[in-house]
Image (cartoon, rainbow, N blue to C red; front, side, top):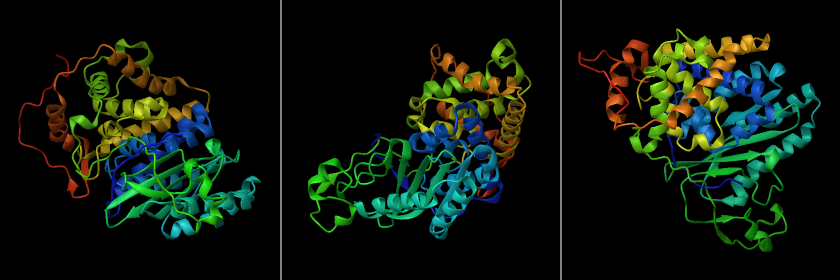
Length: 401
């Protein structure tokens, strides 16, 4: 099982409608592309990986480091996936606050439509929540519970708790395919700041003190939770140390300094603007990348920025072009025409090939300044409004030494 820790600063407020709509459209397209290419189990596996989940939230334009990614991503996926559940065979139940209380009823409805064992799904949902609220007493109380289930009977749970005193959140990931026991180290991952010694009755070392989850009133062994190594700071800005500059630089070079017409596998993308190609490259990696590629989730915020303006305002025109291109590729693939889908898949492959020979200079701050300066050209928006037009200046940049 993957373990480690991640800081998820509590952020309050709502996602603006202009972003929420786009998040749902792009999130749904990404989910469908994964199911179409790799199957339903692969989508669940990705959702249970906290690094991939955070990367998805970043590529969708949410604040790259905040607890709000969990709520907004699951809301977007629920709306998008449930509209096409009949085709995808995937259903998203539950959510934040009162929506989480509707999880049992929603699961029973899914069971009626699919023939799955509804009582068993409800039991799994309640037990996973009970474990994270009671068996793991780490100072975080659950306020979000999302249950994703497929027609095959496999499921994933993403739930989040908050500690208002610490102004931090902790996200818990479950995957049925990896589950051996609800009461013995069941998580694929637990994301949150290290709280020191906590009561964790799911630790294998706690077995002598319990015969089952109903015996929680017995001895209370202090066990140090094993956590994953994802650390998200409280600061808003994205810095060079938050991303893998070799990977980011290769993606930017592919988009802005490479003639796509010279690369046979990308010919069908000829005519796509450099800025859109930048976003598509990162979206392609979210769909097709291997787990090791998501060690720096902040890198994916360079696809569509963030609603708080970090690393730059959300380029709504680019976002819309990305959605249209991905939707078109999916539509053509359904008809048996996979050329466009293969071209998008090849973007991440070509970018990885460029990494091997890429040696960036210290481009990060200069490139970020140019991205912000050009934001108004792409319909840049933040929660505060439209990105302003800057004063004229030279913003040319080469990533190569």
